[in-house]
Length: 595
Image (cartoon, one colour):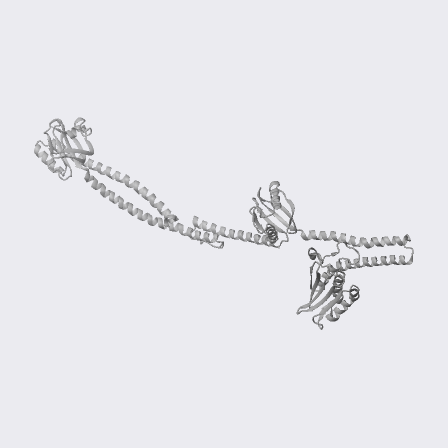
C-alpha cells in the first residue's frame, strides 16, 4: 500500500506542494498576461486612434482623410468610429471593414460614464466590457475593448475617434499563454514526481532496512545489524540502532542469566516460595510451594474456587503485610503437615507492589520434638516402675518387713528381676541409639537357613509347650545359604517370635516361614493372637510402642524390640512390614537381599 508508506506520503506531499504553488502561479500569470495583453492592445489602439485623429485633423480634404484613415486601420482587427460632432446624429463615420464588429449608436458612447469623458473632459479613455448593439432584427452583447481619443476639426472640439475590437482576439492570445503554462506545469509535476520518488527511495530504503532489522530485534534476534550506506542523519540513525541492539542484547543476556540464577535458586530451595501481586494473585512458585498448593487443592475437595487459591490464613497474612508494610509470620496446618509462613512486602520504588511468602515445612521438626518429648516421657515411665519397686522392696528389707528367709528371698528375687529389666531397657536404648547413629557394625557370615531356623525355634519350644501353643517351622529350600550377621538376625527373629508367643492365647499357633527367592530370603512370623488395631499399625516400629496401653507388668515388654528389629533389617539393606487384623492374628515379614 503505497499511500500508507513513507514514499507515498512524501511523494504526495511534494506533489501537492508543487501543484499548489503552480496553481497560484498559473492564476497570477494568467491574470498578468491578460492584463498585459489588454494594456498592450489598448496602447496600440490608442496610438492608432491618435494617428487617425491626426490624419483627419491635418487633411483638408475630408474624403481623402477618411480614405487614408481607413487604409491605416485596415490591417488591424479593429473598427473605427469617427464622430465629427457629438451633437449631430448623422455625423458618425464607421470604417468600411467591420471585422465582424457591430455598429453602435452615439448614445452608447455619450451615456457611458467613462466614454463620455472624451466629449466632456477631452481626455483619452479606455474601457473593456459588455456593450449592447441594436440592429434591425435583433440585439446582441459583445465583449469589447474601446479606446476613445478626442479630435478637433476646424476648431470644433466636439469630435472624437473611437477604436474598438473584440476581446476574443486577446482571449486567443491569453489561451495560448495558458496552454504554455499548463504544459510547463505538467512537465514540472512529472519532473517533481521523478525527483520525489528518487528522494523518497533514497530516504526510505535505509528506513525499510531498519524496519526489517527492528522486526528481527522484536523476535529476539538482537545481533541484527543495519548497514550504514550514507553519512547523513539516516546513517547516524543506523549507527545508533546497531548500538541499541548491542545494548539490548547485553541487557537481555544479563536478565536471562539473573532469571536462570534466580530460578535455579528457587528450584533448589528446600523452602517453598510464592510471590503475590498487589491484588493477592499468585505470580510465581517453586516446587515446594507447588506441593503446598497441591495439598490445599486436595483439602478443598479437588475444586478450585475463585479467591481461594491459598488458605484463608495466608490471605489474612497478606492483608496484614500490605496494611502494616512489614514482615508477618503465621503457622498453617494442612493435610497433616505443619507449615511456618513468613511473608515480606515487595516494593516498587516507594509503593508496595506485592509480597513474597516463604513456606517452611516444620512437620519433621515438630515430629522430632514430639518424639523427644515422648522419648523422655516413655523412658521416665519405664524406669519409674522398676526404680519404685527397687526402692519399695529395698525399704522392706531395711525395715525388716520381710522377717522370714523365704520372704527375704522373694523380695530379693523381685529386686533382681527388676534390676535385670531396667538393665535390659538401658541396653536396648543404647543399642537403638548406636543403630540410629550409624554405628551398628555387622559381622557377616554364611548361614544355613534350615539349621538357623531350627535353633531359633528351639528356644521357644518350652514356653510354647507350657501354654499349649503350636509352634510351626518351614523352610522352602533347606540347602539355601544366606550371608548375614547371624547374631543380629537371630535378635530380630527372637524378638518377633517372643512377641508372637506372648500375644497368642493358649492353644494358638505361631509359625516361622523362611522362603527362598531369586534375589534374597523372606522371613514371615505369623501368630493367631489378638492382632494389632488398625490405628496402631503405622506406629508399631516406633520406640516404646506397646499393644498393652496400660504398660502392665507381665507380658508387656519395653516397647523397643520392634524399633531395634527395623534398624537391624534396614542395616542389611532389607525391608520389614506388618500385616494384622484385629482379633485374627498378625504377620511380621522382612526381606533380606543376597549380599
